[in-house]
Image (tube, rainbow, N blue to C red; front, side, top):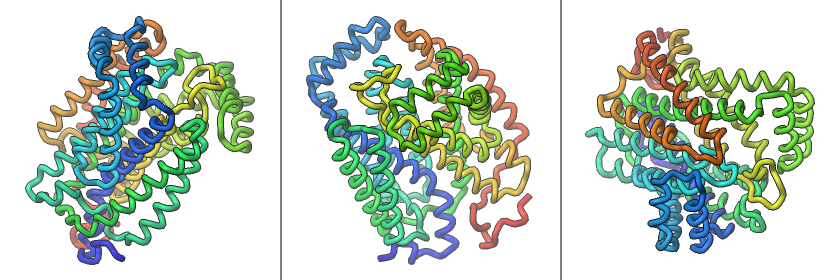
Length: 475
């Protein structure tokens, strides 16, 4: 069976792909993270009301918990059973909607509030990574607003707003299904290596990968009922939302550079000890752990190299320069780090008996970063201009006043979160947050200044121009 691309012209299909694929892919990734998280927490017993209530009591008793969080938690304790079931049901619904790509705004909104609640209840936990649930929540917020803004266009009718747009009109359902089967097999291997699920790791891995695969195939089947996205100036609009995803990852990386430095992981001995812990407690193949041991033996070379690149990538991703090479290289680093940490516990130093870190803790950022990097690569190929490759297109001249206000509020939320977090028991994290917030101010103004020199955004397709010809002579 073929999808609705049979009813579209080649030019329409290619235009549809370039305008809508990127946000649709991110929607699939966020949905997969929601599905796996709910299944994992169910088999881990974290959905049990008594376990959830115990977490709430522990958070209230923690000295460094902000008063606002304590007040909220104290209010939720009597309703712990209702809250935990409602929270996980909302995340399950969010994951289903995001993968099916129906009511995407609703799904992304549910995911945002669900992950914000999880973040607020767990970021004070034992050695939990600050962005474990915060970065998925921010990704979901950006996706919700971006889809909402695209659907505000008068050319999107009710069906388009309900079912979304075709994700890949040139790919048949059979081809898509085969690709999904391969991807689900890879996911099963990744989930297994992560040890998520404890004694039920095989069940959690199989059920998660199969559920994600079924929903992804169903999503493709629904393309026969979706409309072709309107051919309009949406390519540069989508590009600005991709920029915001990149900016968010850059902010995360800025924080990580400061925190790693304060934890002495950017010293030769600290770096060597960190790598050796991954060798001892990780669940990666033996050949890979052998390579890690070799890296640890040459820490005096790899430590400064990684530190310099992380700092450079963080700056570039925040001020949005060298977008496609830096984002793709950063994706490679995230992939290596994510693979390295599979099976390692959140507790530091790693110890047996502790639950392993969530598989999507860094993997989701890796996949979103790869999507952004691929977008930038195709955009660079379409625009054969060194100015465009180095500085990219203009950011602020191509967005509406509403989006400028949203960007301001979005940055304000990040700053408020950072400056309102004062955990006494995690002073290193506290200092890293404040250094990050202070450093973002000059970086943000640098991004604004550079916008004067960026290339003018051209409303072109990655594959064809309005005449159906390849972009071989673009300025």
